[in-house]
Length: 384
Image (cartoon, rainbow, N blue to C red; front, side, top):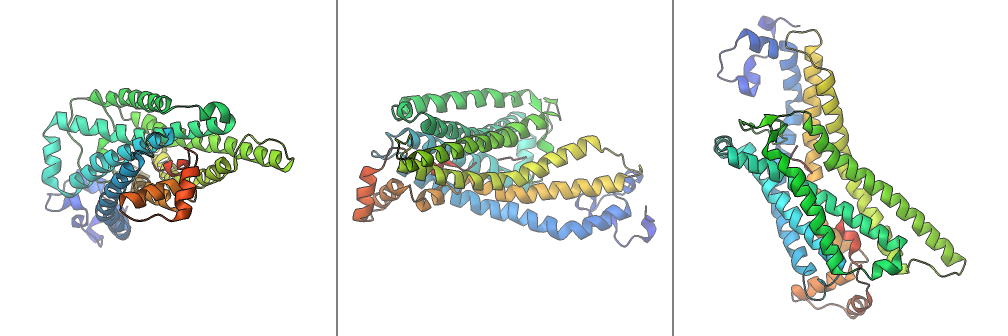
């Protein structure tokens, strides 16, 4: 350990140490080597904070606007009869709730100390925020999983799937939502990881039982389990698409129409984009959890500086990837308007905006199957 009296940086470089009387415990917690590392890391930390505070604010504003427009289109008379539109409109609602209750509130608590103190002084408000942070993230993710399963059913059993009604899709949305509400209500009695938010706000003082290990369950439900399911189902879909192509080449009756095949290809592309956005966050978050739980060192102990340096790197790398993860809640609209199989959505959008659709768009819209906008479903986080 470097001699603190000869250290090039004092304790004032550490935010929580400014204006504080330094104790022997503080000297052990922030030795010279760790202070030097913090100063060297500060440019990356500053960049990440800027992305999370100002970038997230832009994502929230744009995401709410675009999700609102998407919801208006998906619930138009010519769209709302489709089970697909029900899944997608539910997803836009859950995305908007995540943007407002999770991300916007997170930014406000991290940027405004008076706002966060209001939460800290109100156990009920803090408890409510803890519940909705988990709930809306899970709702967005698992509606995607439910819709992916629905798509697989459409491909595997096309005749039965085409007879599926909006009522059945509504039942799936209600059941999935109800289960996740019950899962999230455990936060009424248990607290575990609110003190490690990427927005760096101080956690509420709580009378609830603190169970740190519950973060493993949260990460599994929010990241790994849905990601593995989506990847596994997509592999099955790819196999089914190849089987369908083989049937077409052999001039036999194909179980999949060309329209279904085109939609499926776009779905695979969009879902792969989703996985690529969420996977870096999941990997870093998992490594961080394992590191913090298996490599514990107390201040002053040999190996403490290395432990804390790695801990800081992992925390801010997680926060950096979380910023990009947030795009999942705002990109649906762009997927809708760019997908070649979402012509009905674009035609309805033009009508909503008072624009005139082309004859080709109108003709295709009339001929489009009711699942024509399916691939635009895939956008998912954490306020972890």
